[in-house]
Image (cartoon, rainbow, N blue to C red; front, side):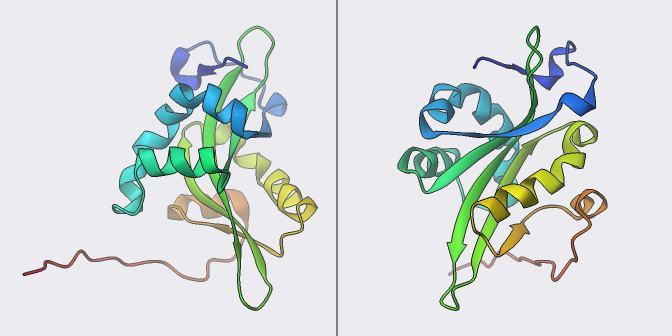
Length: 157
């Protein structure tokens, strides 16, 4: 599967064709150069908690999965966004499908796919879906906001 970035100006315009696809480990590693272009701009929003190297290692080790929002047009397939998915299981037994990192653009081409994320999480046996991201997600997902994080860097010494 070799796909182009949405910025190539030949992106298909039929939003109905957009879909989510989970990449297996081999697919994600084979397409890492393309995926890295999506994740790289999102790394600063992790406030130093993730690096491109750590994201790649988590995918290689199978601790994280990659899901892409894309239009699989046979002439010009285009990825709009890439998501890093992690599973968290709490001592209460609650299993959480966490969208830990998202990079890309064109949310108007894939924002409507959030119900597909929910179905994916349900089919995999998760109890909750969680997104760490900007406030703009709220207009596409319809989930309740339960908190916002405020972070301040501390100086040592």
